[in-house]
Amino acid sequence: MKKIIIFDTTLRDGEQSPGASLDTDSKIKIARQLTKLGVNIIEAGFPIASKGDFNAVYKVASLVKGVSICGLARSMKSDIEVCAEAVKPARYPRIHVFLATSKIHMQYKLKKAESEILKLAAWAVKYARNFCDDVEFSPEDASRSDRDFLCKVIESVIKAGAKTVNIPDTVGYAIPVEFGELIKTIKIKVPNIDKAIISVHCHNDLGLGVSNSLSAIENGAEQVECTINGIGERAGNASLEEIVMALETRKDIFGVATSINKKELYKTSRLVSKLTGIVVQPNKAIVGQNAFSHEAGIHQDGVLKKRSTYEIIKPQDVGFGGTRLVLGKHSGRHAFNDRLIKLGFELDENELSKAFERFKTLSDKKKEIFDEDLLSIVEDEIVSIPETYRLEDLNIVSGNKVIPKATIGLKKDTRVLRKSSSGDGPVDACYKAIDAITGLKCKLLDYSLKSITGGKDALGEVSVRIKSNKDEVFGRGTSTDIIEASAKAYINAVNKLIFNHLRKAKPESEKLKL
Image 1 (spheres, rainbow, N blue to C red):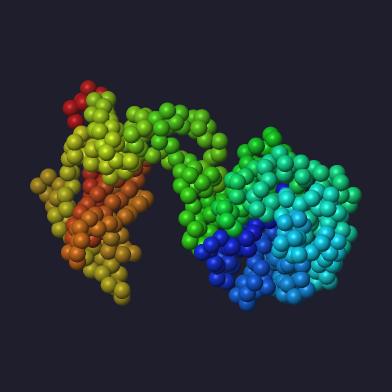
Image 2: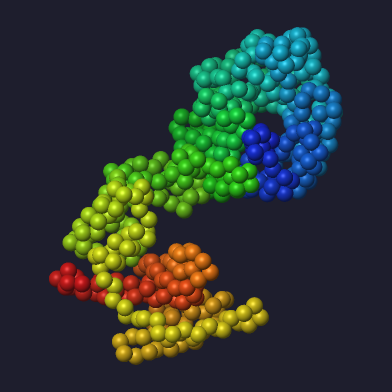
């Protein structure tokens, strides 16, 4: 299957997003993650722009291996020389030179005639070839350029030694049919086009960056230039993750592949968002927080029965933990019950009906219902969880130079059972002592602590999720002492495990009495 080359320009064009300046260390971190992701080329920056950008490109070229490192340069002697020096340490260096070819850019920005542009473009490529075998040329604003003139420029730069010719939709002006036709025209009218790779670089001013890139691929483009999360100048660039997953999901249409390790997409998106400070919109395709979330009852019911009813991509394939069913006023009984089971509650029909009615009342008042809300509905109003074990006392020995130790006393009926244990910290020691008393082998899956009042004597609430065999339950505990709150939360979860076990063991006729 034909491979499409993925040229990532997050560190160059992506960094041009307002407020997204990256320091050298951040660029190195992102470049290393892009290598794990499997991109073929990393455009690390615009070396002539500043000393800092030069150093960043040089460091990336020196430290990041296994991928081609590219630098951008205008068609100027100083730009090309500085760029060549910056990418020199790379095992696979590339110099990317550009020059505008549209009438509006030639007249108002460059103030040059077509004949001058034609000569300058060829000269820039030939000069860059003195420093580097791999030279790419971009006729800036290609989508608004005269097509006959554009084809002459492309033919000229290929003769001068350009191995890749990039066709940019610099201002996001093109529409998919038009842009695809442009690529087709270039393939027909440029006599030496077979000696170069056709690349595309599409901006998103009309929201068509990805669509234009895919249309170009359909018409023969072999390289696509894009950024993580679609960041970049103005409305940004074509989004790498969207292009890759469109090609993957619709192989029946495109019949091409990429080298991208798709399971690294979400992780890469999070890293870029964190280091640039640009938040990913919740409804962003592929990597947005809502990309695999469902609230509508019909959708939730369908997904629970067969995931592919409403999901064309497996969340795990792009690095997400899984499908997320958001509980709100549009949610149905099926999704509600599924969440309760995951929280450790298996209600009978009467209990479920009561709980669902209270859930619907609450969901009219709140946009999203959280697990804590469900716990309150079930524990406070529907099912009374008996306290098989209750915290009697605890004693902690801890410090930065001693092994933490906990002694726990739990009351069961009229007896107080006491055990001691050491651990990695005071909370871990407590939990091990509780396990020793109850005889249960529990795995801590999640632990969270939050303050529910203000001041130095704030009341803290601890929430835990534990697993024993196949049962998973949540527990909560509050106290002004976070160790005590932690112990109470764990004991609360243990009591639920015991309660669930007893419910499952009872005959159906007796379950309604619980």
